[in-house]
Image (cartoon, rainbow, N blue to C red; front, side, top):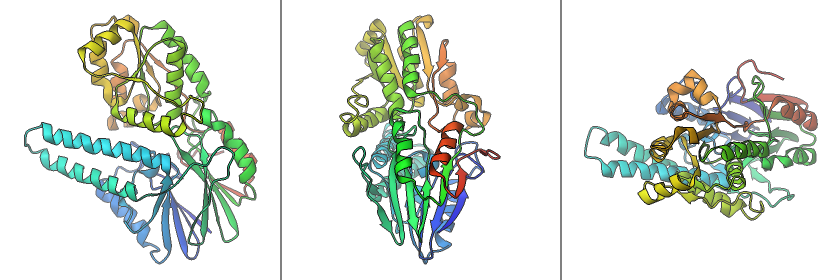
Length: 417
């Protein structure tokens, strides 16, 4: 087998790795560059770059496999030629469909609720792009997460065999791959961590299945960072202490991070505060998590929050009783309206996202909403742990796998073990 890292050796995100034999090629991820990482590109430039990848060796059987549904791993999927099969997990496919169906609905509402203007043409173009993305996602081939302790099924494509193994990351249904061909074995880790509720199976899985590995491909996001990686249950306990101290609690968190949402839910329960959400996307993802994982997790990933809206009666009730409200970064206007007139001393924002979104100038320019959200509150506390493996975890993975060679991707320039 040949390995070619098209992007990701000297940057976090935008990952594209090609593994090939004399007759077959598979790409692991087709990621969009993260804001402030790599050269800024237009949609047209992204499409041209992807098309080049698929015309270099068009005589070979070719497919794309995705580790998970974060944009820096899956974001360029709709530029892949239609005749190229794309594979992703069932859970990731559901999350992507929920996302783009709601985005499309948003564009339709925008178009219907505004008068004809110069923006109509752009809105129509965006709607068509949404439709294209949904059409592509519906064609994705999928694998189902196996039952606990069961070996997943292997997918054969050409003369390459790929076996997906579930791992823990800051988005639901993330995977690592065992890739076999020509008598060689590659283990591609994807993005991963051990310090989440679902991370306890990482090392046992590697010890059982990642044997006789020729090449280990691992992420190295945290190699140059000093962030403390503590377990999700500690995140939850820290939140309990804060929720007990304030009557009104807003938590800024991701709609797709099943483990963080569980940490917040459990903290709200322990602090005897009603749990609310105000995002339609979060409502959709929580329904997916509850259906797929609620029973097997013994209720940890079962979500039944109340849905907050602009109804005066509901807002008055929340103000009277107190609340924990999980919000997305685009819900600032609603949270401000909810908290208007309340004593600021009784309100706190728990910022439960990466701090680079409000500290890094490039991130702020690209998406200032995180900083806007944070600056809107008098009382703010950061309670967060990374979705990525820290240095010690990466070193332990390398030690367990004992591969002949190690390639580190998804890392900052110059970062190394």
